[in-house]
Image (cartoon, rainbow, N blue to C red; front, side, top):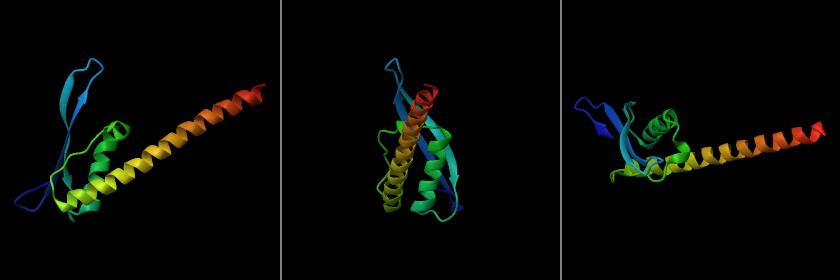
Length: 108
């Protein structure tokens, strides 16, 4: 996170990824304002919004940030939240599969 002279906080989220042809790409996904109270919770919430906007929750492999203690706390919270969301998505997928199976059985 970067703070301007006027104490406005900004977050730049970049990422690297390999496409299906094994070509490496670097991309700036978001450059956004972080609301006042630049603490771990607001930073985590802003990161989650950026990640959700790009629909990359299940595609993250690693997260790198500088050594600010606020970042450490935000990343820890982010990992916990993403883990919960991924778990919920897995359960929803399994429930849909189960629903499809039950529907087929009922047709018999």
